[in-house]
Amino acid sequence: MRSTTGYPDMSDASNRSILRYDWATVSPAVAVVETVSERTDRDPTDLPTLNDVVDTDALNMLCNGDEANGNSITISFVYANHDVTVLGDGTVIVESIDGEQ
Image (cartoon, rainbow, N blue to C red; front, top):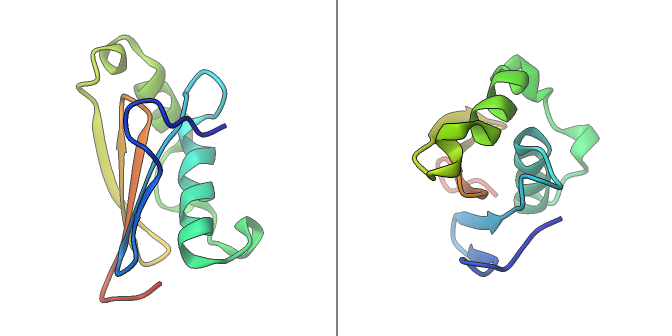
């Protein structure tokens, strides 16, 4: 479940989406797939497997760990031709590479 607490859901029509999630209800791995799916207008099952790009167990653990409570966690990687940044505070930023949607 997305939350509008803090950042509202924001999308830059040109190449970036910023969504905020509550890690207590949505895992970071699921949030990444949801955000990229929404950004690309593709069904989540049509996207590449996230586990092929990042260790999803580690991603979830880092974002839900003690360090994340201080919001100091930032994890970035490329997934489905998009730069993805996951923050400990529940923010997921997805930016198109080379102007792709």
